[in-house]
Image (tube, protein in one colour):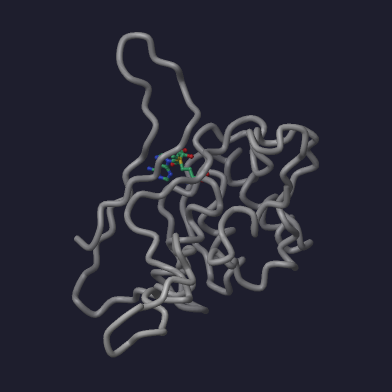
Length: 201
Ligand SMILES: C[S@@+](CC[C@H](N)C(=O)[O-])C[C@H]1O[C@@H](n2cnc3c(N)ncnc32)[C@H](O)[C@@H]1O
């Protein structure tokens, strides 16, 4: 096992007899020590990106990687609830940006991404967005159709459903947060933080 990753999100059922669940666990296994891990495409901004050594042989040089830091094993992305721009009829849909981090770090271009529990096809969409190939299995025909529809949307250059309801953003409560067109996303640049590169406020 390489990592146990916690995906934390803010919204969900409000339990009355226990604490409300606000995370999912992603467990990453590899078959051998020969495996893919691309850190650079998924780096996130450093807390102090311009910090430099002030003494010693490396004085004046950056003391942290200017490309950004390793995102760690606690990932915070909004989950797909009713007013999320990616929302489909599927009840347990993952956000594309969550799968993007897995696809970009654990596969190379032209690789296959297999999802045996495809749901609304988020993993295939993420694979296609980043020049990979996607394959999956799903027992519910309605969800298979949703996946096909999302692939068509991707091919048209946008995954955004026409929605007027913004995702709640406490800093800009009156503004809608929209997904950028996929044509604008040659590769998701997670380094320029944040969701602000993916969502436009
Ligand atoms: C948690 S959902 C996956 C959601 C997906 N990650 C997404 O973003 O849409 C699990 C899916 O697995 C499907 N499923 C359950 N048992 C299955 C099986 N034996 N073979 C294939 N799919 C199955 C369910 O219908 C459901 O859509």
